[in-house]
Length: 199
Image 1 (cartoon, rainbow, N blue to C red):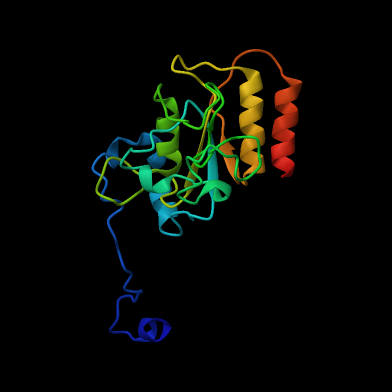
Image 2 (image 1 turned 30 degrees about the horizontal axis):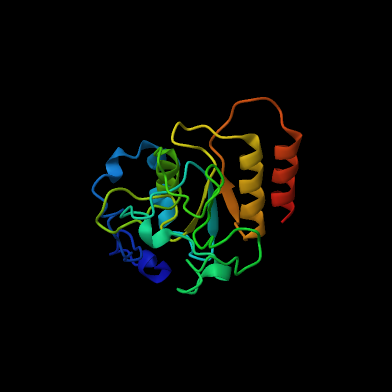
């Protein structure tokens, strides 16, 4: 480039960059927030990593959603096909068959979303991008760990929130999303967040 720029016959020289569409997801233009945070510019550098686990502590996640199904986390301690429904706590963490997270609201291994908020949050975090379907998340390759503590009304207890935060930390979540609030100050929740942060 420098040699060409010194040639008086050349107006300018620049690399011949490889260009791509921002995303092939048909509803991407409806995502105001991703444009606001310059997500398309960031995707030129990285689209995330499947080695990163994001705990979604919310109302659960729709596992079959076309933009989320491939992004779902699987608990390594319960990952064998026979382990998933054998009725045994194979990883010894106190939760039986928690191969895809836990539902603290109903105390079972089915953290499926019956409210919608958790699925929306999960899609914003890690909806599979450039797959020609729906929308794209900030990270196209992240793994989503669904941890339900909000019920179908969208409410839950501090105790269940604390349990979900501690579960996420114990199972290796790198980050959690907690887009909920209300009630008063909770030392127990503060301590759980501090413990997760230390982990």
